[in-house]
Amino acid sequence: MARSRPCRPGARPTREMTLSAVPLPHAGAAAQAGIDALWPICLALAQQRREGRPPLADGVPLRWTEAGGYALRPGWDTQAEQLFALLKPLLDRQGAGADWTIAQLGQSLDGCIATHCGDAFYVNGPEGLTHLHRLRALSDAVVVGASTASLDDPQLTVRHVAGPHPVRVVLDPRLRVRADARVFRDGAAPTLLVCEAAHRAQAQARLGADQVIALAPDADGRLPLPALRQALAERGLRTLFVEGGGVTVSQFAQQGCLDRLHLIVAPVVIGAGRPGLQVRRADAMAQALRPPTRTFAMGGDVLWDMDLRG
Ligand SMILES: NC(=O)c1ccc[n+]([C@@H]2O[C@H](COP(=O)([O-])OP(=O)(O)OC[C@H]3O[C@@H](n4cnc5c(N)ncnc54)[C@H](OP(=O)(O)O)[C@@H]3O)[C@@H](O)[C@H]2O)c1
Image (cartoon, rainbow, N blue to C red):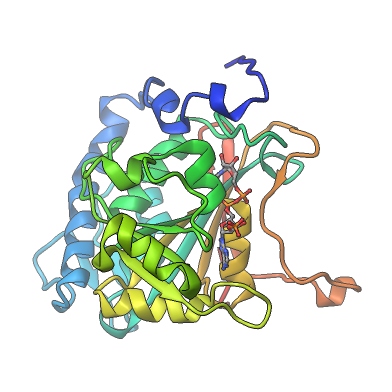
């Protein structure tokens, strides 16, 4: 879809406003039937995790295995099996395993998640957007960085699939995101603002004490993400989805707080855009990060599922 847009943030429509106008992929009734049957079960598994109930009993079209983790019973179609395989690491989070963080980045072949101006519309195809909304619906909270909150003004709600909205979490250490950003004023779902302790009073005056998590920065001036995970867990938010952008996802990876990353690579070359995942530099290839990976076709894009604990 060709678009041209001036490099002026104020002139940009929001990512979600624009993409919501894109028709969802039409897989055909037969191909979609298995997914339509599986998706409510996925939502039920996420809900039982939130409520701390044990894994599903027998008699449903999937089972909890002795090794731990769900397995589909026979009879599902290929599309449903593929969706289940993709989501299984997230669906398997039960009990103590619910403290878990997944992130996603949609990127170009040259590793950019947006143009240098911050335009990220249509890096990926519509299937990627549906996947993004699935990850939101299955997680307790969705996390974004200050630049994404400012540039995209996202809603971070679940609209392209059925499912509950996650709690929205904005990492904005020095309160540069506008107070009238949509997540702070639309009331669609609870929103938490995470800032440096020095800005606690200002943040609380803006949003109320309940909506603010204030953290002392670490020696490098970063918000300590293990402390954030702990603070969110104390609010019952244990399974987290880090939606972007690249700086925020990289911070989670660098601070050892990321379990899984879905990199959705699109056949497009952006050129000197905003970078995606940034990790510690390797001098030799032997030092490079080589996590276990799986790949999934996602329309014209390819999703790389990276197990960062593998
Ligand atoms: N393609 C995709 O999948 C995708 C997804 C989301 C967003 N995007 C695009 O990505 C761009 C924004 O991404 P970005 O990488 O530039 O920025 P970002 O990750 O959205 O935000 C980074 C900022 O968040 C704050 N932050 C995050 N983690 C922090 C930590 N641990 N400690 C302290 N501060 C922290 C900092 O704010 P301060 O600067 O105030 O210190 C940091 O500079 C936008 O253009 C958006 O459209 C693309």
